[in-house]
Image (cartoon, rainbow, N blue to C red):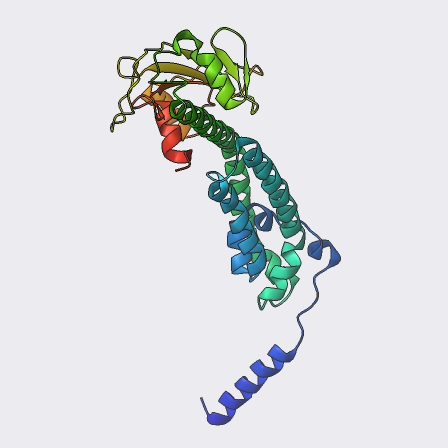
Length: 297
């Protein structure tokens, strides 16, 4: 190739680059882009919509960042808020996807652009199917997370009552209290006492306390706890009287696996063992799994 021909080619390429691309038709420009909606992070990164991509990443991370910082009610409110914002952003991403993607790349014309989007359409269709399949597990996951946060909160509330009572020699560790311990727990929780063994706190947790011994020891430095080593057992209904009022299967490894994989929903009654300074779950129980994930230290 001679130098003149090479120079002419460079000039032609330069002239072509100076030309504006044909505008998209109104139908294509305003059409809905499935890939931009159902693969928002990947699609927006590739087509240089970085702000949108970062927004979706942040929204995805928020529930996992705040789960140890907020109550179960606030957590669910955050999840719903994040879900609504994500849906609005996904629809916006889909509605503006065609125009922004066309502007971001050097397509010859609309036909060239639409041809490039055919592969994205089928990938997005698979992503939509995956979303439909995974959605129930996502709902279960947030539901279970909310209940485990509530359990950790209920444990902390009762632990504070134990510590206050121990300091005043009113609760665990004092033989003078005897069968009246539930009423003293109600006093330190600032909750209502039904005259038997149940205490309802202002937060709505119901504590059913049973099995007291007069001499109560401190919590041992082990994760293994049951009635023969504790001074009392408490059933905690984190959902109050709203139901389903069913005990979680606390000693079944398969149940814990199902909860961890979000294929099963947690019930609302849990069992803990009371010591003079703390409460403890039984080893290998759902309660222990919940505290490892969500207890605030």
